[in-house]
Amino acid sequence: MKRTIFLQAPSFHGFDGGAGARYQAKREIKSFWYPTWLAQPAAMVPGSKLIDAPAHDQSWEDIAHEFDTAELVILHTSTPSFMQDIKTAELIKARNPNCLVGFVGAKVMIETEQSLEASTAIDFVAREEYDYTCVELAEGRPFAEIDGISYRGPDGTIINNKNRAIIEDMDALPMVSPMYKRDLKIDNYFIGYLKAPYVSFYTGRGCKSRCTFCLWPQTISGHRYRSRSVAKVIEEIQYILKEIPETKEIFFDDDTLTDDIDRVEKLAVAMGELGFGKPGFPLTWSCNAKANVPRKTLEIMKANGCRLLLVGYESGNQQILHNIKKGLRVEVAREFTKNCHELGIAIHGTFILGLPGETLETIEETIRYAQEINPHTIQVSLAAPYPGTFLYNQAVENGWFAGGKPMTDDGGHQIAQLSYPHLPASVIHAKVEEFYKRFYFRPRKIGAIVNEMVRDWDMMKRRLREGVEFFQFLRQRKEAA
Image (tube, rainbow, N blue to C red):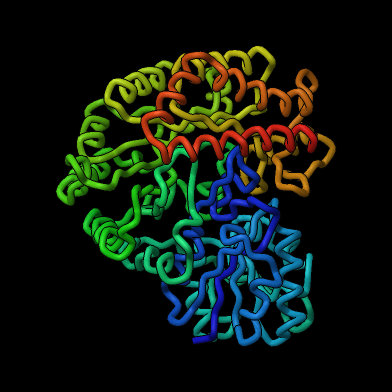
């Protein structure tokens, strides 16, 4: 095997590169997801090393020595981080010219030729699901024999090998938690709405929903949900309980764990058999869910330790939900949220401003909707048209791009890319701050936050820190505009 490094490269302060590709920007409060999409192939390559520089606050100078003896570097990239990642690749090549450097991620899958043409420091890009591609590269196979890669031929022309077949046997993939324990500092990973320290991993790939803005299902993972067996998931949970005992919460990072109702119920029951949901058991679990989970399923999840659901509401306007092919009715989401409140399941709700059909009136409707259903916490994002998505193609065809602005500024703050004749980008950008303030600065919400803080000293310290970060975020994004 080649001496292989899987790299999340240094970037702007607070860059959450581990977030798959759904939200690679500076968040309202400092947060870091695990680099699961790199940890998975790292677990399949003996002797490899996983480096997540942003989460460990590492600069190039901190990690440069790691590449002196490396023979292969697999670097995860994204649309907002691509130019910075090229700089890192060029630094690696300057330090070790014999090292192969390849990029993975949806960005290079969709814009393959443009990516390779951007720098000669990129020896290849891996398309589709790249787990087994990375294994074959580490084995030293000739490029011509490896499915799913693109590279330059002897004459400089770009060669695209045949596509890598989608992975059907998810149980064949090894656990990623051992990679976290071996190479990462668990305490460096925290999300505002999850208990800390937490551990997250995928139990399956793909999402049945057809949301026009969501990158991963439209590029790498697809719309067919392929999952590990419940027994294999439980095996990883048992590993975490034994080997990472400081863990307080497990987050299932599947795009929509509740896509398979029967399976999520069986998984919940199996977790209950481990002790989840029982008095005195130290861990809880959370997951991504669509706002249409039946009450019966929610009851089973809650009884077996489910504490929180991450839910993409996106908008409170039904026509916008139709426009983005959300496959969700507002009244169904209302009933789902009511059930969660009654059962004691917390919700982190995510909303997006600037989607097709947005007006000042629909933004007001969404803000009032969020106040009404009252999730425990929220995230408000700007519509981000990633290349490879239906939304991106719509934006190009309709001339919605606001002067060719990048997705983020140099400090990592998200910039409004879409602009409409009736609703300019500057207004959409400003409405994010208004949304946050009108949601959180209500007597009801302030009272709930204060009550949460006075009952728990650790929560008191955490919320005070997050409050400072939140106001700094608002100030900095205003300056970025």
